[in-house]
Every structure is written in C-alpha cells, then in structure tokens.
Image (cartoon, rainbow, N blue to C red; front, side, top):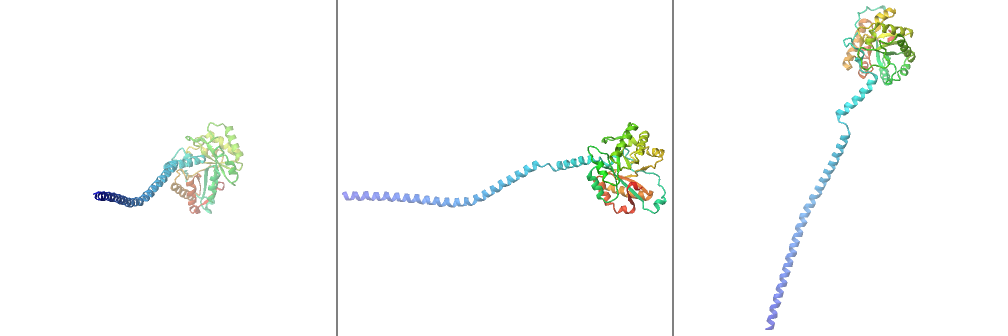
Amino acid sequence: MAKRKNTKSKKKNNSKILNYIAWFLAIVALCLAMFIAGYYIGYDDAKEKPIKKTEAKKEIKHKTTTTKKLDIAKKLPEPQQDIKKRLKEVLKKEKKAYISASHELDDNTLVENKPKPLPPTKKHISHKPRLAIIIDDVGTRRQVKNIKALGIPLTMSFLPPSKARPNTPKLAAKENFYMVHLPMEAQHFSAEEPFTLRVSDSHDKILNRVNEIKRLFPKVRYINNHTGSKFTSNQTAMNNLIYAFQQNHINFIDSRTTAKTKAPEVMKNYHLRYISRDIFLDHHMDKPYILKQIKRAIELAKRRGTIIAIGHPHKNTLEALKESKKLFKDVDLIQVNKL
C-alpha cells in the first residue's frame, strides 16, 4: 500500500513541474514575441526620427536666417526713406552752390531778351555768328573742374566769398579770365547772399564794396548781377554802381533780371556800351528744356551776329552743353572779353 501512495505523489509532483515548465516557456515565448515586435516597431521609428530631426534642424536654421534678415532689415531704412534722405543730402549740398536756375528772375515772363535785330556789320561778315555763354553762381572747386572738363570756352562768373563758398577768390585766381557774379537786391528772393548791394546803400558803401571785390578778385574786368531786379531798376543805385565800376576799370554786363532795368539809360549817360544777357539756358532745370534753349541761342546768334547766354553749374546744364558740342560748330563759341 505504501508503494502505491509514493507512486501517486511522484506523478503529482511531475505534473506540477511540467505545468511550471509550460508556464515558464509560455512566458519566455511571450517575452520573445514582445521583444521581436518592439525591435521592428522601434526600427521603423528610428528610421523616421532622423528625418524629423533633420527637418527640425532645417526649420530652426530657416527661422534663424529669417530672424537675422528681419533684424538687418529693421536696421536699414525703407527704400522710400532712403531715397528721400539721399535726395535731401544732395539738395542740401547743391543749395550751398546755387538755389535754382530760375532764382535770378522775379518776372518769369522775362526769359529772353528780345531787342530789335541788328544788321550784320563788316566785323561779322567774315566770321561765324558769335555766342558767349556765362556760367553764373560758380563757387566750388568741383564746379570749376566740371565746367573745364567740357573743353569748351565758357565764361565762369564767381560769387563773392561767403561761409558756404570761402574759396572763390583762390579758385578765380587760377583762371586766365573770369567774371564776378555780384549779388544785388531783388524784389522777391528769400535766400539773399551776404553783403548784397541794396537800393538803400549809400554812394560810399557801394564804392567800398566794389573796391573790396577788386581787392579779392584783382584780375576782374567784367561783373554781372546776381538777382538784382530791385537794384538794377533803381536809377540812383545804378548810377552809384557804374561810377564805382569805372573807378575800378570794371565793365558791367546786365543779367537782365527785370524788364525795368535802368542799366541802358545809365550806361548811355556814362557814354558806355550796354551789354546784356540775351537768353537764359536753364530757367527750367530739365535737360530737354536746356537742350532746346541751347539750339535757340545758336539760332539767335545766327540772326543777330553776337549774343550772350547765361547758364548755371548744375548737372543737367553741363550735360546739355556737352551733348551740344556738334551744334556749336555753327558758331564761334567765345568768352565775353572777346565780344
């Protein structure tokens, strides 16, 4: 009986062991299955992650670059502001040299002097028509350089020295021939030059001013008026001026800034030849207009024999003169001292 009991207990123990082994193997199999599944799933994720990481880097880089561009853009002025700023600076520099070509005239209808045509004299028969071009408002070294670079005989008329143009006597001294563009009182002009001659100035004051101009510009032989519509239309003022010029051996050329000029009468009283401007080249400062005026000046020279044109040293005038070199072959382009 004892042997049967032992046999039964052994069988039960063996069964339990087999169950444990089965469960263990099942658990191991389950773990292996989970490991294998996790490996493949992880591998797929691993393939995707570098792509996402690269994209993330690109996005960060793009954002950084964009941010830098925006920061730079903030530092730089807007295009319109930049253009306005540059234009303002240019105009500020140019204003030191001249206001505009139209500042000389108070009466805008008086653009061209229209005297009665004179018959050609014997002096003109054997010569081409003669054209003298005066460039007013010369005041800087750069303007002198640009005028001379044209390679044509222009007459430079220098403004007297001022804070804006302190070196005009030195610049003029280097030239064989030049004029002085003497400021005189205008009817309406807000940007008056310092030491402008006024109608209220006494005989002695005008004489002293002309004496000073002669001291500053010892070689000056011709002076024309800068603005001066009020001064030149006053007979007493003009008498005092021409007297002062005569004392200093200076000739007057009337810029004709007003139709009411008394210069012809005064010059006649002094038994002097009256010389005046016939046409302004750059009353308006656009180049097509200036080119048209240059052609007009050449036509007037052909009709009258000799004329004087006045321009100013701004860019469009100088460019128009350069472009008109071929047209000047029809005339003798001369300086005013050769009239």
